[in-house]
Image (cartoon, rainbow, N blue to C red; front, side, top):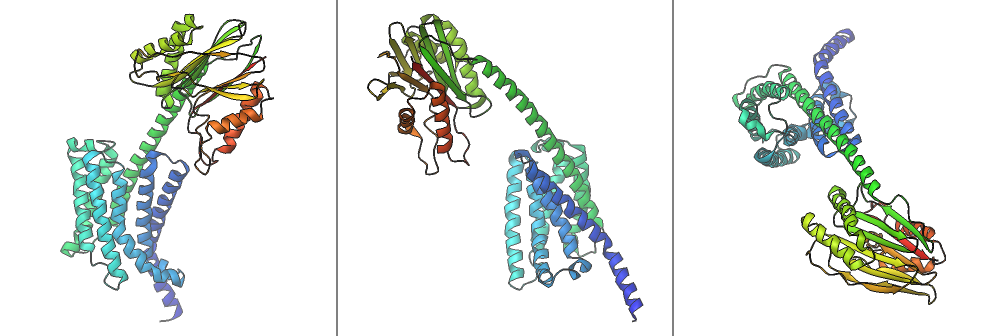
Length: 474
């Protein structure tokens, strides 16, 4: 055979393999694109795109590595590895398909598919292991084919029997049903060939796979876009909730004759369970409430909104912390349905130079005494709100002197942990207050928040809502 004839034969051979090369490349590209999209826009609902992409890429790669023209251009190392890769894909292709379908399944069907996945992995381990040890690559393909036939029959039942389609995320989906029927016919035809020993017509498997792949991809994208729309709707609602919650918090701190006040509020999420409020009766009397609802997010924010409303009904007793906290507790115990909250309330009378303080399971009030240079921890706690409606709240009388400083805060200030797992704690908090005792209330607030940010591990997000109120007596 001369060179021209050899070239013609090679060209004819390449033309015969061109379809496999093109289809294999298309399937690999689709799979890689799906995985890339899933990685860029990772959400809980996009896992189906990952498995769908892996399934498509594996199928396309299988077509490519069994094509002599492709293998011939590979480096020698890859040529040597090609049989092992081909065997691995041959057994694991079904597993990747089952994992993709698992993302569309619900209830008992999901459990059944998980059992099929485990069975497929066991067959794959035996088949691949046998080939690596020198045995034939198709030793266990008979069992793999039987598992594939069983899986396809299950899918057919889901498509053909409407009452079973309830086990799918999107029941009675026409495009998915059509693609499944086409693929089921092809899969049964192809897999039974190893049982009855007949030759499969060319391109039948690729066409059947393409029908299912694109129908499944259509459904996967529909799920992803539905989740995106739902997420956008939730984000819009959260933003509305955040605006509403911001409106129930004081817009500014009171401008008092003998008090300088700084308030800092940093929610962990868009909405939070922390709450604070000022009750000002005149220029010499001020009540301050701070509360921390258990939990986070919208449920806690709803309870904090209830505290805001309830505070209006007890504001007439602003001069008596016991009645303020007792009234709030009675309202929340009857309306909050078991939700718990801690709170602290201080009534400051700058005319009589006296403060009254009481709390409900809340962190202690910190009081810096400038004349003696001492830090006092004032605890006067009753039970948390919501435990029992008839709780009593003891009141502590605190003298108020010029240059004294009071700190009210939620446990989000003391609980952040560093890289060693050590909480910021009361000791660190008190040390910061001592070290910056000459700073103004607003400067101390900023300094403390900065120290908290430095203490917390950079890779760890804020774990609780933070509220801090600093009151300086002048």
